[in-house]
Amino acid sequence: MNDDANLIERFLEMLVAEAGASRNTLAAYRTDLEQASLLCGGRLSGADRDMITKLPSHWRNLQNSTVARKSSSLRRFFGFLVEEGFRENDPSDALPRPGMVRSLPKTLSHAEITLLFKQVSEGLAHDSPKPSVARLSAILELLYGSGLRASELVSLQRSSIAGDKPYLIIKGKGGKERLVPISQQARTAVRRWAELVDPKEKWLFPSRTGHISRIRLFQIVKEHAARAGINPAKISPHVLRHAFATHLLEGGADLRALQTLLGHSDISTTQIYTHIDSARLVELVNNRHPLSQVDLAR
Image 1: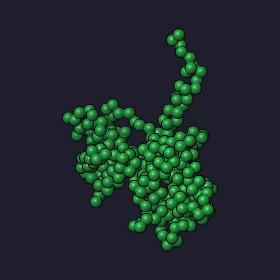
Image 2: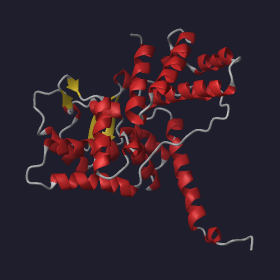
Image 3: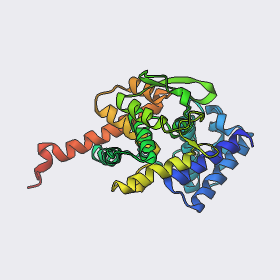
Image 4: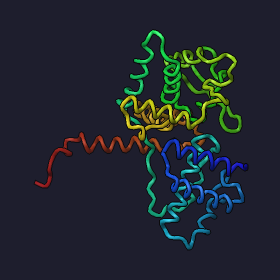
C-alpha cells in the first residue's frame, strides 16, 4: 500500500471515530481523495502548492457544489496530515473556495473539563482504584494537560517517560523528536498507570497486539464523556487537544509558545486559535457591553 492509500485509510478511520461519518460521507471522501491522488501521480499526501494549484483545472465542468465538496475533502485531508505530523505545511489554500467558510475547531468549556476530571478523581479516591480509571486519568492528563495528538498518545513508549523530568520525549513524523511539558499532576497520573503495566511492555498504553488504536482511544474518551454527563458527540481526543490550546490562549499564552507546545511546524496552523479567541471576544461584547442591553430604536 503506497503512502497516499495508507494515509487516506487512516484519515477515513479518523472520520469514523471522531465525527461518526456515515457510509455515504466516507464514500464521497474516498472518491475525491483517490481521484486527486491519481491526478497527482500517487503523490497527493506530499504534494506541494504548485501541484495542488493544478487540480482545479480538472474540475472546470463540474458544478460549484461538487467543486466545493472536493475542495473541502482535500482541505480536511491536508489538515489531518498537518495535525498528525505527516507533513509540515498545508497547501490547501491554493484550492478554490466556492461558498466555503472555514469552520472553527470544536472545543470544551472549563465547566465541561471540570466534569470530566471530577469523575476520574472520584474513581481514584477509592482504596483500590480500578486499572481502567488509572489509565483514563493518564489519558486525560496527557490529552488536555499536554495537548498530545491522538497518534502521539497511543504510540507513547515507556521510555518516553524520562524519570521525574517535567517533559515527555515525543517522536513524530520522520523520527523528529520534540519535548512536551508535562505537569506534576500529569506525571503523577502517568506514573500511577505505568506501575500497573507489565514492565516487559514496550508501550505505555498496550493492547493485545501492540498499543491501543486511535479508534479505541476515541471510544474510551467518548464513553467517559457519556458517564460524566457530556454529549459524546461533542468530544474526542482532538477536541481535548483543541481545548488545551484554546484555554491556554485565553489564559494569556502567546501564539509562538502555543506553536511550540502543539508541535506545529507552521505558525499559520496555530493561528486558527486566534479565530476562536476572537469569536469569544465578539460574544463577550454582544452579551456584556452596556449598549447590548439598550434598545436604540426607541
